[in-house]
Image (cartoon, rainbow, N blue to C red; front, side, top):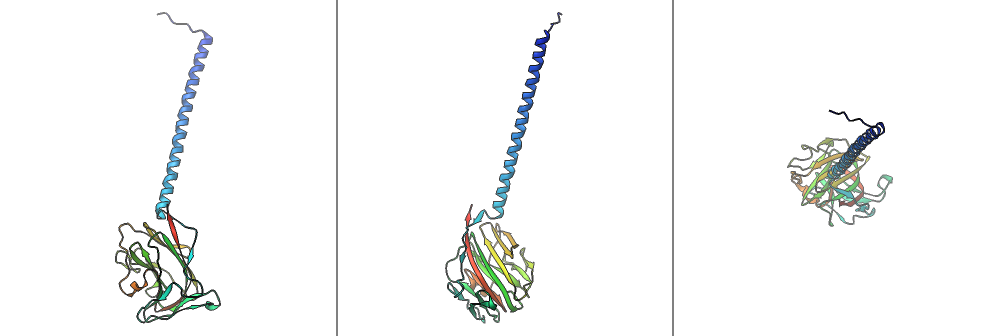
Length: 254
């Protein structure tokens, strides 16, 4: 066999071409790897957005709150006709401060309810409430949940229980929303309730206290006179309280 003899400059050129081809291949592989990493980051970002939207019920807040208390009258509200309920009136300067609606303690439930239309889902309600005196819940916020209703209880069962009544026929003292919390007299608490098709959420002084997915859940009112609070209502139990800064806003579904 005759061994082929390479011309040195040609051999150098061939080696250079081979190296260049290998470098280009490495660059192509690196580019593919970078592209795949970028796609993976985009997918993680999209997953994060979807998770956030699912967690918030797929809704965002409309910027505008609508006041439900004009600061001077019970316009849009009426005293709820609970048996043995206490009186309800507006104080223009409650304890020297801003106007408030005062609910006096009754033999059992006392309160007021909204007599105009209310949204059934994709909305938030915010209020400020303060216990004046009494040994049970200082605020029961009744609100629509689609075609049903529920009540956020603050300070029930002797003044210490927070929760939603009712979920799967279990009231605020015995379901997944049950929390202990004290409500000393004279202190104002900021309350916000959010209702979407996916969730019920609530905050107390900006700390989340309720986060319940609605899929597969039965939402209802606790049996009894609380049904007189629909569609929106504020109530107390053997307790006097003050309410102010009552407002509502609709949520925009994403």
